[in-house]
Image (cartoon, rainbow, N blue to C red):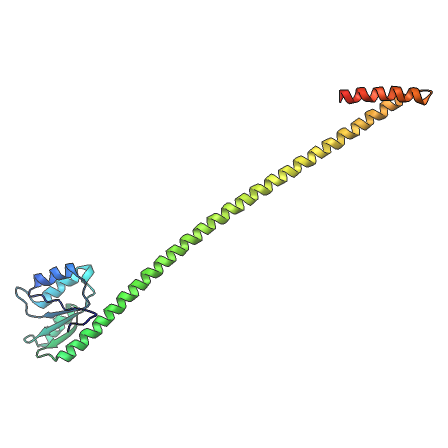
Amino acid sequence: MDAPRYRLVRAESAEQALLSLLADEFAVLILDVRLPGLTGFELAQMIRERKKNAEIPIIFLTAYYNEDQHVIEGYDSGAVDYLHKPINPAILRSKVAVLVELYLKQRELENANRALMAEVAERRLAQQQLYELNNTLEQRVLERTEAHKRSEEQVRLLMNEVNHRSKNILSVVMAVAQQTVASNSSDFLLRFSSRIQALAVNH
């Protein structure tokens, strides 16, 4: 029954079987109904009590317990099949092969699911990082826009102030010119230039 894809592990007692179940993973269990110390049904119930082994399919073999009540007890214990001896080896190999194939497919599916979950988690992390970067970028753009607006407002206020002061200076110049009116132009130019220079120094 050994094949490259799986191997056969033998246990001569219930204790050996339980120790093997602790050490390895199994695709299928083949239990004889008659075991030293307890029945295969009792061992199957003990196996089912452990969460790790609860889903392992069990095939019961027996040469003695052929009554319907025994078959029902076997299925109640978690068996997927109940075979009577003598057993056709080809049939048993075929049943085991099907169960092993199901086990391998289940493992592949679990591995694919784990890989998918890891990829989903990685993409969520990348999406979160992108979201945070976008928020940071938007915040910086907003801050620069606000700073630009404040700068433009300051420039506008300065320009208004310059305009206002220029008008004041022109008004002062006009007043100086009116107060410096003289009878001849040379006298006016001399007095007016002197006053403009004093105004410039003061400014």
